[in-house]
Image (cartoon, rainbow, N blue to C red; front, side, top):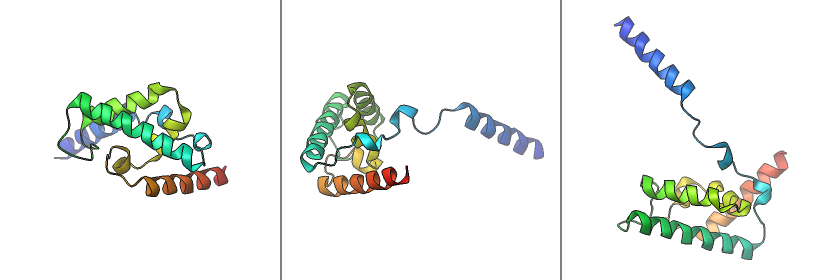
Length: 126
């Protein structure tokens, strides 16, 4: 029994050491890139939502409003945002909670207010 536990622990340690972290370094949020103007935030939300809907169409995941558990959608959307070269869009997208990031029915105002609070806190800490 001790041998099995030892083998299991060795496997867990090796996987945790060799596996990549939970997020790519390029997915870290650059809070300074996030605009504070309401119109600019609205434009970013619209752009991100269009990209989400394009990923939903590509993956044919029409049966739900929140796609956070559909790997095809969230992987495709994250890739598209990373490749966009738009620092403000990346900050907006990766700054959102996972629940909001992949939801077509998110509350835009609540998301923008939360992101602005997080931006304030992050920049004040620097």
